[in-house]
Image (tube, rainbow, N blue to C red; front, side, top):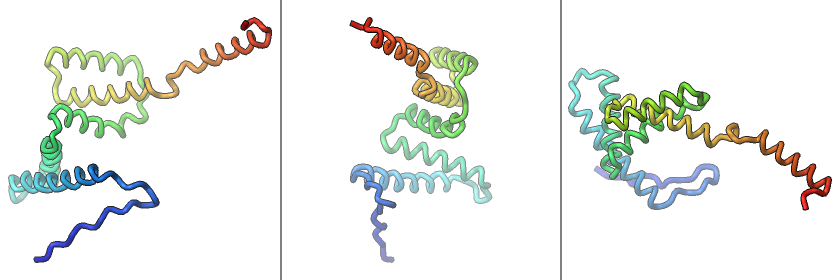
Amino acid sequence: MTTRKPPESETPDGREAISADADHWIRQFIKHFELNVLNSSRKLPPNAGVSEFQLATARAILATYLDSGMEFESAVELLAQVTLEKRSVNIAWNDALNQRRFALIDKEIQGTLTAAESIELAGLTRIMRDHVESELNLPIKGAQALHRKLLELESTGESD
């Protein structure tokens, strides 16, 4: 049986190529992922349904991250972040979400946070950070009022 070399990565539409290190990491990740999918699929019964294959695939993804040297907690946080990115796009940060986040942080400190709550906390933290870093959160009205006041002082000659 002949083995063909995989095609070289081409950059579409003039985008820059990824670094050699990134290319190597991605290729190794894919190889490990394939092996982990095969290993977890072999453990399934012959009459396994789609949901069982999906669970095996999720296990393979986690195993591959761990194989790459990622700590378990970091892998869970990363998966939670990706899971909640799409859901959190249109959610406005508010006091109720802030209170829920505080309650989850308390549970985390006490060591009673469940896996589902850990994912929820990661999602709430992402929404909060997006809110804090957004332009909507900047004190524009106050800055504009200060700017007007400075312009008035300058025009009257009082700024010296």
